[in-house]
Image (cartoon, rainbow, N blue to C red; front, side, top):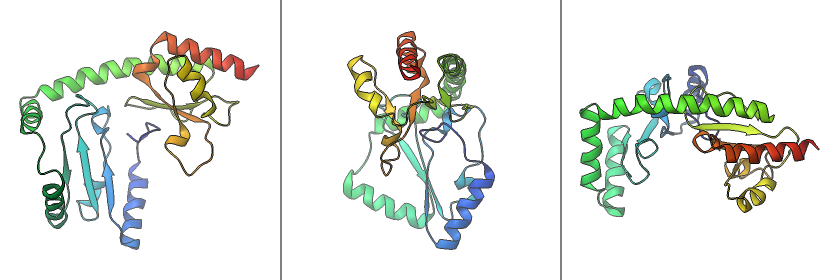
Length: 215
């Protein structure tokens, strides 16, 4: 569940990344914070690599609550020891209450049942938003199979940053492509959150923008 495109890395591409890490002697940090939003899981870098050159990072705030700042790291023993030292020096520890709360949800099966309901709701929203975008005339980078993001653009717009001022005046916040690729001067792409874009008010605003651009 890559952010911002909402796409997955194929096993073929993952293997290429690991081969490059071996060839050039670097470590890969697999930031897998959206993995629980996948409907069909795909083999991750850490799984393929067995934590030789990969540090795996995962959290629960993207599915449960942004206030539950709990996650975990899977890595080699040497790296784990070094990270533990850094954590003790910088933040000492996280909240035992939130850690125990997450632990109980995992072992009691509540989290699995919750994810099942969440996948169903997101799936319905994703279908509705994709269909609405097609009617509006937005171009999708790819139709996501899971997650909560859609990477799309207006066909006749070269710089999506130009829309942010207008959207904010109307109470709508956009995530233009340059936010995710700051080395580029401009990007036509926008990351949309399907939970927000189900709102007909947002869809009507996008429809007006599409009509203005076409004119």
